[in-house]
Image (cartoon, rainbow, N blue to C red; front, side, top):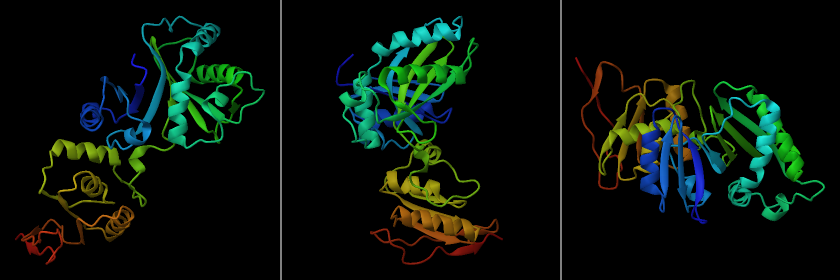
Length: 304
């Protein structure tokens, strides 16, 4: 493997993996491979986390330390699993993984070498292990996580903390495959543009992928008459900047939340209206100038 490449694993809403793959291949340079599986897109690139984190179709991002399939995990007891996990420690790309994580987490307390110093009596770093497991095994997910956490604590002297942790390791066991990664996103990315939520607020990542399907073109005027808290208008306005968006909702609370979210993102190319999108009304005219400013409001007209 190219020593400059970083292997990322991004989680995606199931069914939208190919749309995420499309965005990754369009926006990132030096992609060596980009593979999809249920709810995941794994790719290799030279791009660092600040660039990868700008992807709008993915929810969480991990840097992969180890990935192997075709391992006989179903027959392993918990004790055998512990022995196997210990044997994997030296095969994990710890230096690259910790280096990428430090940049993502803005962790400047210790160097990569200091964090990975196995001779240290105690390390300042706190961590936890989460295990996602699929398949029939002789151990539970919690047992696997606890086992691997004990191995890491013994190896690096990192402090265990299930709630106030600096670093989260993800142990993924799917039938006879195993993957070890470090979480780079403290919070799911679908929340990044929303500050005011409603009961049915759409994920920003789903909204972005829906807009990809719509194939918006420069100069298009896009309308969302049931905008709710404004997620679709926000994603469209941020990522398709040569478009103009009309957003409305019959509920004044929803419009208020949309307005809050638009202002938080400093968006100016969205015209927001309340109460004009009822079932018996249609839009009769749009009046725009070349700078995307409204000369006249949307004028409702009775459909009857």
